[in-house]
Image 1 (cartoon, one colour):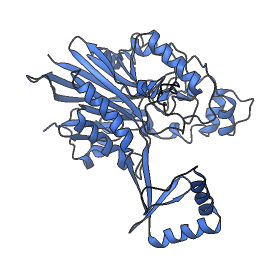
Image 2: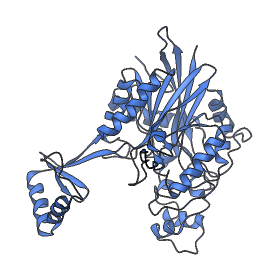
Image 3: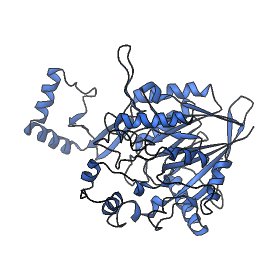
Image 4: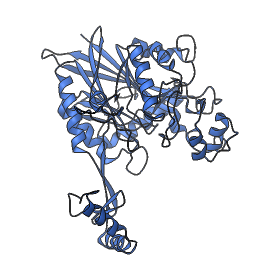
Length: 437
């Protein structure tokens, strides 16, 4: 039996969508509702602004009314990835309010939980034509946002499903010698050795690495940043991929990752390594999001890795409440209203998201699968739908997705083709589909 799977990027929703009634939006959302299964990344908390605002937010404190879940469900979405850098914007209490709102509606979500094991687990969504499992994880988060493991004598810590990143800063031998000298003269190295001696720290496992604060340095021919996924986290996530592989028709892994390698459109080194390991473990596709703009598509062993699907709904300027720490972070006067704070942050639309068209254009892929004799589903086609979020619209209207007009659609597809080419992926003639072979 065939199964269609529609994918979107980040959904930051603050206002009613009216996806069935708004003539500008309805054609796109009719496509969402027509899919057998539709996926989105829930970027923010459906917590009714309840909880304890955290000092370290994911950039902005993305609280929202709990009814945004009803709007997204009515818009046709079935799978909600929830492991993002905003999951703990309102601390653990705000996260638990969101979990309760998702559970109360019986929605299929993954990536956050009351314990680490809960956050790691996949959700399973069954449609008439098959079942899709989803595992959601995040590499961009503040320390302490990770869920904690439960022990026999103590509960776990609510949080997100983490993918820690091992980062090494490679520098020349001359540069490394200078860093060592600085660390010695400032007493930084002596302090580190004292912590090791006192049992509050441990030597690095690789003697070739030199630590300076939280950074790790290594001698190389040239300066560059190298990243790799944490092996322990990879093994823990693979365990659930392998579990899901035997219990479902399709396995989707969602990764929220802001990290880049040079230009923002280029994913950091670890992202590709992680995605390919997930497919080797049994995943049918990996869906990335986080940087709020498009990245390319790789077909690895015939299975898609979308490195970022950009924004789908982008109403971050309409957040109704900003905690005091948010005002301090943006250096905003305390008597400013939230809308005025965002205008100050973007310098009246001259900086940040409003100043860059890339954040307001994306694609919505629809993947068509067919069941095979061995019980595995085979990918037959990938259709690409270019969308616009209304760049340069009034602030209360932009951020709402609609089908892109022909000229804009062609430009979006051309850019996606260019971003995908380094991965060896080509689009079909006309650009609205991907060559699978």
